[in-house]
Length: 192
Image 1 (cartoon, rainbow, N blue to C red):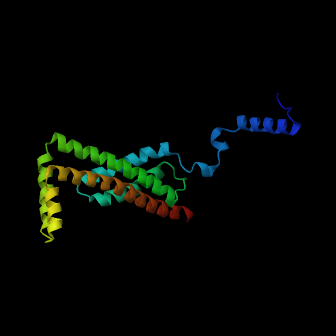
Image 2 (image 1 turned 135 degrees about the horizontal axis):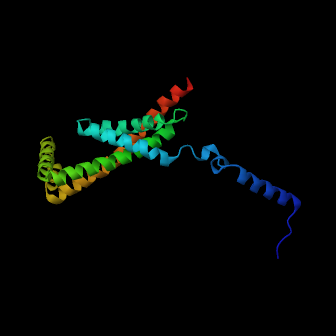
Image 3 (image 1 turned 45 degrees about the horizontal axis):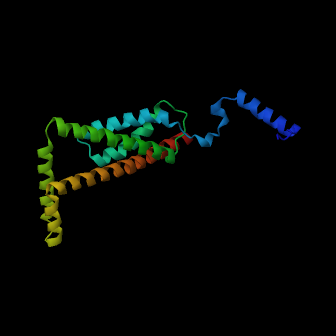
């Protein structure tokens, strides 16, 4: 059995349905619920990742590239939205997204270089040389045994996978820090 509708409930439901038809959907949500539209953030973050990848290919330190991609993501996001207020937390999100995209672009570029330019033997040789350099700095037999295991094919694969995981995490963290700095600096400039 349906319950009778009281006049107060009927007035409330008609007023609510009337307001929903009058206001566009973007105005019915609180502003704090959607601080930025992430679909609009993808293009500036991808551009920042591309610029940082190109700078790194010209000799920029990878850690500096990771940090700068976050800052550039905030700068590029602000280019089309001068009135947008970007706080440090939103900048950190932009930077982390930029860092993630930077990692993807850089990994694909490096993989293409290794595959198509047949750089795998050079990469393997460089890794072995670095392991040997590190081994000369210690006389501990256990550490030397670990270095010998890393020189094997399986050890080099583990070393490369560990490096990829580290680079993935570092790109997100350092990109987020760069974005937070960008948000803090640009936020300060907005207040003056």
